Image 1 (spheres, rainbow, N blue to C red):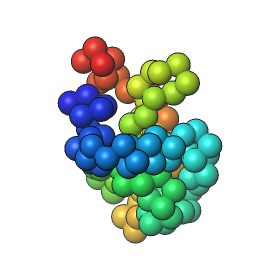
Image 2 (image 1 turned 60 degrees about the vertical axis):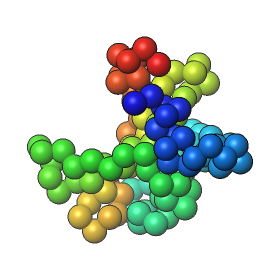
Image 3 (image 1 turned 90 degrees about the vertical axis):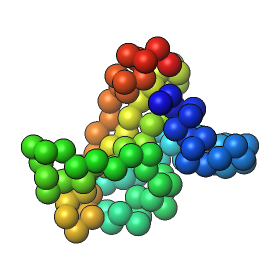
Image 4 (image 1 turned 45 degrees about the vertical axis):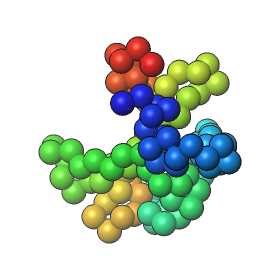
Amino acid sequence: MGLIASLLGLIGCDPAAWEAERKRLQPENFDKIKAGMLEMEVIQILGKPHQMVTYPLKPSELNYHWRWRNSNNEPMIFSAIFDPDKVVIRTEQMRDVQQYQSGS
């Protein structure tokens, strides 16, 4: 599923909601997310995550992912990794390789 389809599924076709989502998912907001923050604090800044995943090799960590595009229009993922108490352990940013592979 492409970025646009994912976002439309989350926020519908409301242009105001789309713009609010775009404004939240910016590097200056990602910089605000720090270890020790609570889940609700992160969601207040970034909105609901596009995906929540627990990976088999680290079952005690919950990964929240937000998809966005950088200034070069490259698909990216920002992740906040939470402990079982939903406190941020660390954050990560990376290229969204699934978007590259799907040709989006």
